[in-house]
Amino acid sequence: MKAARFYGAKDIRVEEIDPPGEPGPGEVLIAPSWCGICGTDLHEYIAGPIVTPAHPHPLTAARLPQVLGHEYSGTVVAVGPDVTHVKEGDRIAGMPLISCMHCYHCVRGDQHLCQTMACTGLSYQWGALADLAMVPGYQLSVLPDDLTMQQGALLEPAAVAVYAVERGRVHAGDTVLIAGLGPIGALAAMAARALGAGQVLAVEPNENRASRAGHFGVDKVLAADDGLTESILKLTGGIGADATIECSGTEAGLNVCVDAVRAKGVVVQAGLHTGRASVDPMAWCLKDLTIEATWAYPTHVWPRVARLVATGRLPVERVVTSEIGVDDVVKDGFDRLVDPNGTETKVLVSPIVS
Image (tube, rainbow, N blue to C red; front, side, top):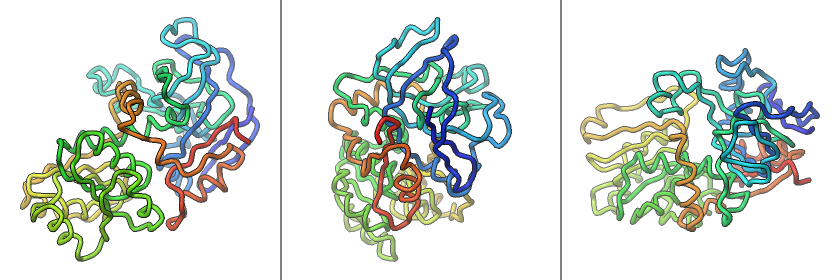
């Protein structure tokens, strides 16, 4: 069967591999329909291996080359003997985290903080950028009838965004600032709207992405320059934003969020940094700030996020700028997404589209 496999930095190959066998206990064989390219995938492509395992992973024993793809939807092909919550033919979306279920964090319900956590499509034998994939059954939720397969593939990044906004303690009528309008930032803007934010502002240097901000419920895009703080104060009656969500994974974005938030406000670091950042903790103290940092999402939120999408209050499909086949995943997917002046926000890939 065909699969997109990651070997190392700038080395993704679409090649023929042996398909999975029959599912064992707790396993489900799926045929992926759509899969998103994530910021984590892009980090691997630019500078990996980072989280993809060059040596056998302690939980899954997976190692490079890695079949990519962890933001996925698909159809159940076969189920293991003890899997009862999904059946052959079900339309599903996958929560890709793999946890040991017995470490300190897992037994307390924080499986996303598992001490040996792995992830389908990053540190597991299979990923969704393939004709078939074998996944742990507990990853799968049946898609509501009124959600498309494309929307199903977007539940994973939507869960990241919703979790970040909720950690920002956003209340009805609040002003929220989003730093970075990549996929997570765009989804965070929509999530803030869904949770009742009265004003959503954004900072985004890429003109192509900034031009689509209104599509995501953003009221105004601000320039990240010396006048940013004054602009925020003018738009908030001299107070500042109630919550700021950093989605760019940059030092500049984090410090913009600190400057823009009001005293006793909340700054959420959601974007993943690939290096250290220089910050001014005294500025945090003088404002009596709450600094939150998020990693992924609680693993049980899939049905809740799916319902939010199904209501139309979280129109995740708006972030999609291209839908491509797996054969074009490098030139029309990864290469376009890593272009700092590119036009793409979210690219969905399908093994069944040519």
